[in-house]
Length: 258
Image 1: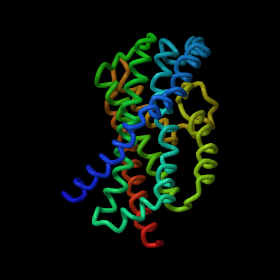
Image 2: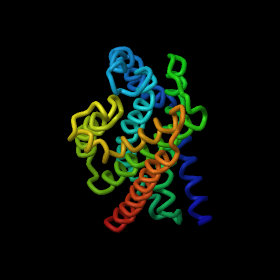
Image 3: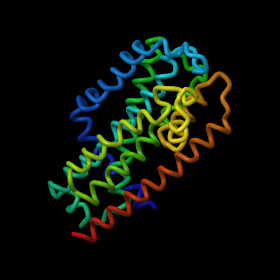
Image 4: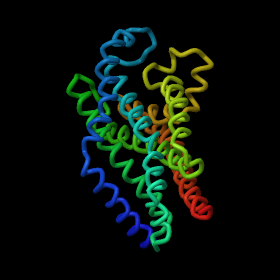
């Protein structure tokens, strides 16, 4: 365990050093959530007036949606960094060192988790500056950030798994483009589930993006139902553990194939 923690620390340090040398990447990737927050927030503000919508303002409703969807889009392409390491031979060199295989996989997960948490906090702060309310206070905001990190880790782990298995950029890009819209609009990111068609509500209920949103909005409510929040967060945590385990297994399979 000590070797795994130490290895994860050093591998994560290496990744974060590279990221800090080019912080413009983190800033530029905030452009899309800003468009969602300020453009969609204004364009669809009257949606909150629909009977049964269940939110005082659309801005209050959309901030968790933007935070979670930013985590999804940010991490869906994590496999591209793995492809870079495969093509440069960096990954193969790491695999002949004594560092634990789990540490190599964990480093990517930790880097993506920290980037996601930072961007989530920025979006929440900008939403607050624009007039969004967070009745759940610090605890609700913490759950929102944690849920965005968990769903981000799921997508990052699956993207890395895909990169290790297919080793083709076009496949990663094509699959992400194909899945991003269904993950977005077959969830409660921008529209209340109660106003969706029946079949869409059932699909949204099984969408992990909705689990993250339901946990976040539940924790941000005036009177949080913590049992419901824990149930949604629990399913998300189980899915995260399974996705990370799959990424580690894929790394070992990649090593055997070399």
